[in-house]
Length: 280
Length: 360
Image 1 (cartoon, rainbow over the protein chains, first blue to last red):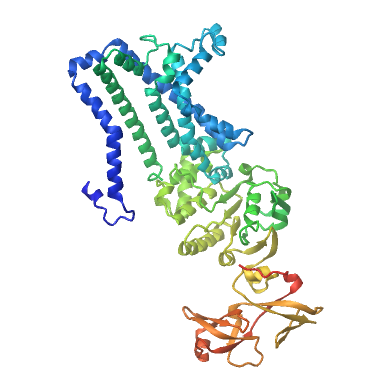
Image 2: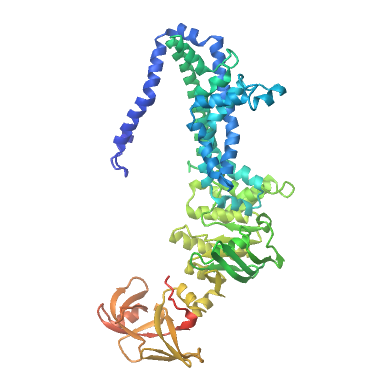
């Protein structure tokens, strides 16, 4: 540490000041709330913790939260990439409008999104009425949760992949064509690997966002215990019953699992960057 | 394989990149397309490669029309100025790319690919970097890998777009010589684009000088240098001094200087511009028969030649390059008045030269 802080001859001035502010800010905004979370949970003891977290209903909700978040992130990877691809590669009328549309899930209050989606997918909704005769129920099932999480996660993938696709040198594709590669080969072996790191980043962000999503999900999920009840809802309902410690215990478990996932994804990123030549 | 370019036209919006260009490239020759930026040389190269479609005209490969042949089937090797290496692949995989994307029945075995790639890497003297990633290489190394990659598919034509443009002077010089040697060994028809006249003159068998979408002159490097066909070529190939005068029935007059020319016999007092290269100007202390006179402004005496800058009475600068011995014999210092006589002039009549003087 002392060697890092003693960069006296660094070309960029202000390292200590900016580093100090960064640490302070991260501590204040990120670490302090987490510390409070841990502190509050520690106070309840091991038995209390297990009692709060170990119930079947809580475990089911955590499983559901991570499974739906994961699936929606995967869906967003595929379609987010496609949207980014179309926006970057093809000129078409109304392109700016479509581009702006992508950000809508960012801007829309999540509750509004939830209500809108429920209206669409309820058995008597615009889309739901056609799916119901086929035996497909979207609203008030885990499928509905995935729909809502896919909606709120889309911009993360599009907005991380888009600039990378834009910066992709045309020459790379031309070089590959000159070497006799087909369109599919070029996509599979040149374009896709180049965008992979950004896809991982975008997917991670969509996943992380989806695990904590509350507003849009509670309307469409139906919140049936053991079936379509997500972990954030459990936390809120525990808070409603003034069981603050129980709520923080569940939150802590979610935090731990999220942290492990993010760490794993970061390791993959790091490995990919190293493989691709000193992170260049 | 020989390449014929017939009446190629290419327009980008209002800008005419190529205006009815025709050119024959002999099999096995190393040809340079030389010109300032925006002259159309890169567009012509890309049309040969098939990366750009001409608006009109034909490209023939070995006598067969290839105008509508897709790039992937033209069997051209293309080397880009900024290398265009695949960053996520090792050097080995980069070079092997062209072989590994071949359809299954044409694709060599993994063993054969390995052998061929290693042979190419040895040829570019970088076999020890097979497992490195492009990000870990220097510019010169990257360009050599790019070249090896394009040669892996055994192209019939090698096209290089400013291949040394992004490299520093020393590496440039080495790679130039190396490309020349490589071409001597492989004898693959090669076309390279450059804006560096020294590079074009040094490396190529023939040079094509281009400007504003058309070809100004085609010829061997020494030929082009000694006998430039147009004022543009004269100016583009190196430093020149300009002298304005008149030509009457083959007789050049610049001020009090007169000289009989072997050309422009039918000129009738036409305004003319004479171009003299600095090393074709001699300095003397005698006023008799001098082309011009000037005051010595600056003496640059580093290297085998001494470059002397003179200022004429009208403020125009003249640059002369004389040998060290000649300079010592003259014994001039800044402030002296000296006279210049030309050993060799290139004279163009004003209407041929156009109204403008090129500034490069």
